[in-house]
Amino acid sequence: MVKNPELLIVGGGSAGMAAALSARKSGIQDILILETDPYLGGVLRQCIHTGFGLQTFGEDLTGPEYAGRYQDMMEEEKIPYLLNTPVLEILPDLTVLAISRTEGYLELHPKAIVAATGCRERSAGTIAIPGTRPAGVLTAGTAQRYINIEGYHAGREVVILGSGDIGLIMARRLTLEGAHVKCVAELMPKSGGLTRNIVQCLEDFDIPLLLSTTVAEIHGKERVTGVTLAPVDENLKPILEKSWYVACDTLLLSVGLVPETELFSAAGAEIERGNGLKVDEKLMTSIPGLFGCGNVVKVHDLVDRVSRQGELAGRYAAEYILGGK
Amino acid sequence: MEKKITCTVCPRGCTILAIREGEKLKLTGAACPRGEAYAREEFTDPKRMFTSTVRVAEGISEITLLPVKSAGPVPKRILFDLAELCREVMVTETLKRGDVVVQNALGCGVDLIAGANL
Ligand SMILES: Cc1cc2nc3c(=O)[nH]c(=O)nc-3n(C[C@H](O)[C@H](O)[C@H](O)COP(=O)(O)OP(=O)(O)OC[C@H]3O[C@@H](n4cnc5c(N)ncnc54)[C@H](O)[C@@H]3O)c2cc1C
Ligand code: SF4
Image (cartoon, helix red, strand yellow):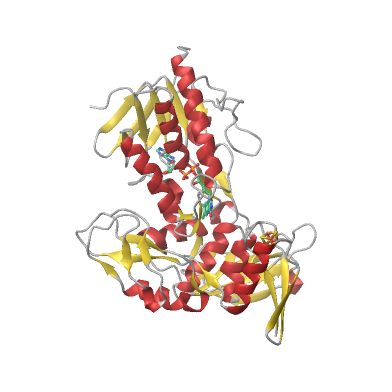
């Protein structure tokens, strides 16, 4: 039997774990984290590259190492969590409905909730590229998860659209795994990725970065056979007269992240213009007792900032519970 | 010989021009000494952190792929060989984060270590 926690945390990524630890430090005994995945750590688990934790730990860690440090602290504090447990619905009175692989259907009534569900990638369906959607078109993050956690191969001849850090990191990973990354195309005149990633993920392997360029069409019936690339004008419209064809069996999309807010907006929580959960200076949403932190509030580049915001959310949620409001 | 190097030590990303003049290396464009040291190494023997995954034998853990990293920077020229090595390694023990997976990988003097607990 799962009993009602005082504080319930939705999502066991870096934001959720930091929130739990700091709420415990602020005097909340009864905490429960619910996590959909079969592991804690969220997106960190698939980010096997280094570049995490320089601020928090003063060391250059990989994603799994960073997550592992937090998991150790969670064990030490004996903070309870349920894996394989998606939260299905939240009601405005903070009732939480979830389904757990081991505990079955759950209806919980915590005094406060921390929303820490992170973000998801814009997928092929949500961006406007003409042509088909055959197999082999996938988001960079999905490919990262396939390769780094499940051990699949993603493709032999690859084109990547989007030069944010996820796209760059995947260009290197695929190259080292024996794929031929033909190019990274970027719609904007400048890459949004870190200089370090441009040098170490593209230049090191002579992978061309094509700025002000986009995928104008996707070709292939069952599997991708190629893409049409085209330069864009100042309104970001493809100049089709100057387009060219590139054969490939895989197209990775790294075209942006969207906060995972549906669960909370369905309960009535307000959404910020930039698409994240709207929170006040104490990280509380428009629903009293519902707090938010990490990528569900705003997409963060650095995990250290996510952890810091998680800590604050945990503390404010604790104050809210202890204040008896 | 002449080489244009983008410094990656800090986000400022200075472009440093390295020119070999006989025995000496002339560096211009670095805004600080850390950048000069980086450019010197980048010109002679560039080094990188290496990360990958290795397979875990059945029955050891529910984790089937173990993330690994080099315990320190390794020569850039052996990155592909290390990736190849990782495709061949199979872990057969219950390793903990930080444990050595491959000692002195390919004789480069750096170990590959486990990035997670099995
Ligand atoms: C490819 C990539 C590279 C990055 N590189 C770096 C880097 O080099 N350095 C750096 O500092 N930062 C980096 N970041 C950023 C940083 O890692 C993330 O911003 C941070 O880890 C996000 O933490 P989070 O807890 O907000 O979200 P997440 O880690 O996404 O965690 C959210 C969790 O909520 C769970 N969840 C979602 N919905 C539900 C539900 N309904 N019920 C239960 N659980 C749910 C999810 O399964 C997930 O575990 C990178 C991010 C990515 C994607
Ligand atoms: S030279 Fe110095 S200031 Fe310039 S990028 Fe390198 S470390 Fe930063």
